Length: 277
Image (tube, rainbow, N blue to C red; front, side, top):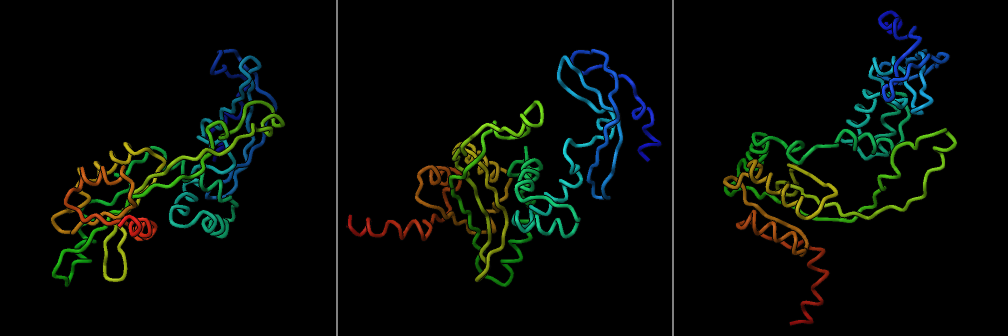
C-alpha cells in the first residue's frame, strides 16, 4: 500500500533543506524497519543530508507520520494504557507476552509521561455524576451520610535533569558518551479522595505530581470549584501529617471538614507530647 500510494516520495531525487533552503540530492536508499500494532513494516526510502546544517531528512517518514524510534505511536499508546493499570515491571512483562514486542519498564515510564504531559487534575478526575453514583452506592441502606476522605501528602523523589534526556546530536559514538549527571531530589505532592464503606475503601480520585505548595493549592481549589466533593451528601474528613502548608490550604478551602492527623505521624510525636505535659 505504501509503495503504491507514495511512489513519488520513494523516487524523489532532490529536496530543499528545511533550514537553509539548499538543494539536496538524494543519497542511496536507506532501509528502515518500524514496529506497529499490526506488525513489523520494512521501508526503503531515499535519505537527504545537508552538509551546512548537519541535519538529515527522510521525506517518506514525514509523510507517513513515523516516530523517530523503532516503536511507533500506536505501540507506545497501547504500552502506556497497560502501564497505567499495572506496575511498570508487570506491564512490561505483560506487554511482551501479549504483543511479542519487548519494552523495558524504563521505556514504559517514558511513554506514560509523554502521554500524561499537559494533563491536569480535572482531566483525570471522574465526572460529578460518577462521583454521585459511587456516593449513593456506599450510602445505600445507611442512615448517616458516608465519609469521604481527602488524603494529602508530599514526598521527595529522585528525578533526571533535562540535560540527561533524549539523544545527543552528532555521530553515534559521540552520542554514546553521555554527560555524567546526578539525580535531583524534588518534592512530589499529591491528593487522594476515597469513600469509606465498612472495611473497604471506594476509590474516587488520585493525583500526584512534582509541584510546589502553591500549585497543589490551586489543584485543590479546582477540585472544590468543580464540585467534585459533594458536601451535601458526604461527611468530609481530611487526613494528613502535621505540615503547616497542608493545613493552611485545608482550613481555607474546607473549614468544616473533620481534620485528622495520620496515625504514623501522631505516634511519632507521642513521646514528645507526653514529655511536654
